[in-house]
Length: 338
Ligand code: 5GP
Ligand code: MN
Image 1 (tube, protein in one colour):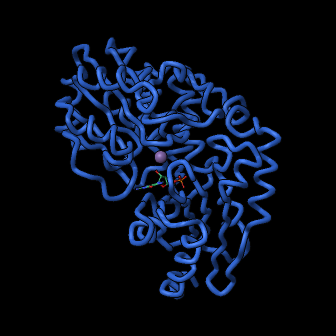
Image 2 (image 1 turned 120 degrees about the vertical axis):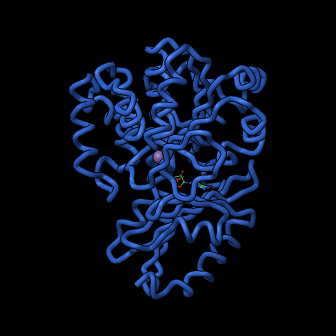
C-alpha cells in the first residue's frame, strides 16, 4: 500500500465508522479468515464491523471465532442490503473484481457510496476501490491483513481470536505452508500468531481432520474418475451431479481433491470438473506446477482466473462437452506443458 494511502486510511479509521467486510462468493479459508480477522481488529478500535458473505461456506470453517455473526447475502438479502447502504467503509477481501461476489451482490456494492478498500492477492485487480492493497506475491489475504495491522502500528493489539482467524487463511491458502508463495516472512508471521494465541494443532485439526464418511467415499469416486493424458502431462477428475448426490455432497467436500491429480509424477496441469445442475454450470478448479499459468489459461478459455498455480473457472456447457473442450485446447499448450 502506498505511504500516503496508509496515512489516509489511518485518518479514516481514527474515528468510529460503520464498516462492512466482504469476501468472494463460495468463500474459502482465506476469505473467511481474513474478513473475520479484520472484523475483530476493527471492533477493538471501536468500529461497528460486520462481515457479509455472498453465500454459504463449508462446515469445516464453521468454528472460526466470530463466524456465527456472518450475514449471508444470498439468504439474508434485506438485512444485508440495509447494512451495505448504511456503511461508511466497505472492505473487499480476497478478490479482485466485484462480480466475484455474484452479479446481484456486485450491483449493490457498486451502488454504495461507501469508501471502498481492497485487500487482495489475485492478479489483474479491477479499479473500483479508493484504497488498494493488492500484492500478487502474497501467500494469502490473511498474510496481508497481518501486514495491514502492522502498517497501522497495531500488531501488539492482536488477540488470540485475530491470530486464529489469520492463521487459518495462511494455512489453507499455502496448502499448509508448502506452496511457492510461502516465504520465511510467512513463517515468521505464523510464529508470531502462535505467540499471540493461535492454537496451531487445534486449527489443523478443525480444518483437516473432521471428515465425514461420505466425504471420503466421494473422494474414492473422484480418484476412480481420475484420467491422465501422459503426452500432455495433464490429469483431470470429473464429478457429475449424480455422483455428488450419491455421496450426500456438501459444500467443501471437494476442496483439495484436485491436488491428488497434480501429485501424479510428471503431471504439471491438473483440473477437476464439478457439475452443478442447480446453477447450470460446471465449476472448474485448475492447478499447475512451475511456470504454466492456470490464471491465464482459465481467463482465456473458462471465464475465470486466480493465481499462476491455482485458478478457477466455469463453463455453461455439459460436463462431457466441457471436458471435450479442455482436451481439445490442450495441444495448443503442448510446449508449455512439457
Ligand atoms: P478454487 O479452485 O480453489 O476454487 O480457486 C483457486 C483460486 O482461483 C482461488 O484463488 C480463487 O479465488 C480463484 N478462482 C476460483 N474460481 C474463480 C472464478 O470463477 N473466477 C476467478 N476470477 N477466480 C476464481
Ligand atoms: Mn486467498
